Each structure stands twice: as C-alpha cells, then as structure tokens.
Image 1 (cartoon, rainbow, N blue to C red):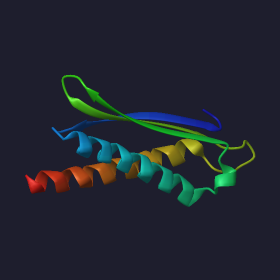
Image 2 (tube, rainbow, N blue to C red):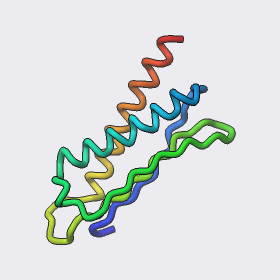
Image 3 (tube, helix red, strand yellow):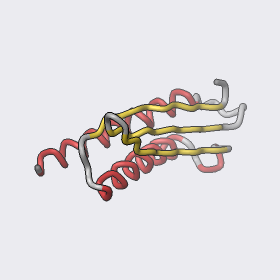
Image 4 (cartoon, rainbow, N blue to C red):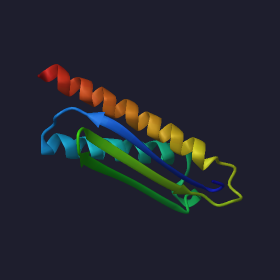
Length: 104
C-alpha cells in the first residue's frame, strides 16, 4: 500500500443502548487517533480518516475503517501504525464491553 494504510475490522457487539453504541464508536475512534498522534506529529500526517459504523444485521458489529497517508520521505510505516492503532482500539473496546457486561 505504500504511503497509504486502510484497514477494516469487524468487532461483534452484545445488545447495547444507543448511547452505549455511540460511546463505543467514539472510544474506538479516539483510541486510534491518540495512538497515531503518539507516534507522528500533525505535520507528518498528510491525511487521516477514521470512520466507525454500527451495523445491525444478524449480529451487531462495530466496523472501524482507518485511512492514513504520510509523506513518502517519512520513515514511518503507515500500515504498521494503522495495525497497531486498530489493535489498541480493539483492546479498549473489549475492556469497555467487559465493564458493561459486569454491570448487568
């Protein structure tokens, strides 16, 4: 993918209220942005897009899409950075879901 990174990960979710769904999506997005900007300065990022969507089909899924573009001369690996950020977001969402399940 060169200087661009795009990944989509589907995370199955239990039954949640609308507010909880929004909070989970926000948590994933904030975690991804924090992880990326912990590694890169804002001036090192040409373009970044983080999208979270809740899909309600047979299962309830959180879909996370990340697009990251950095200058070609930058020695960063956007693919690895996106993978790391998504992994951190997954861990944060999983932790929050366990906390929500413990309340029930």
